[in-house]
Length: 120
Image (tube, rainbow, N blue to C red; front, side):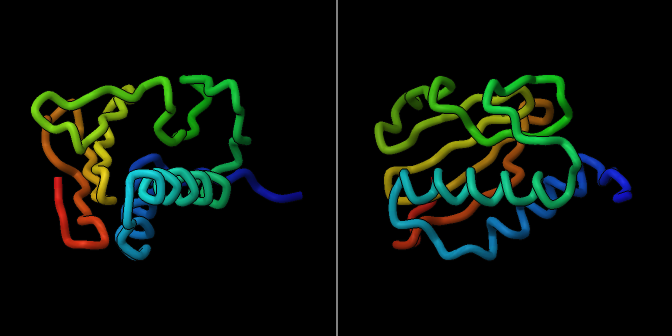
């Protein structure tokens, strides 16, 4: 019988950031969003025993990628969309840049330029 995985949220976040940083720079918003979604889901599938639930429960212990219904405009930045989650915001630029901001500390915890070198 396989033991359930019990890696901490911090360990999983660090692995997500490591893999996302190592992925090729995205050329546009959709490619960046797909990277965030695919990599986070792979990390959670590999590092937890919590099954993916498309109804997106907030209390099952699994981290979920940004959801389309959380998309908001960023004032003064028509080239950037913000996806608000419980503890952070994921900003994705039209040219593939990705930035993740922690709400508790209001600090940037991840920053990656798009394929052309553009940053948020």
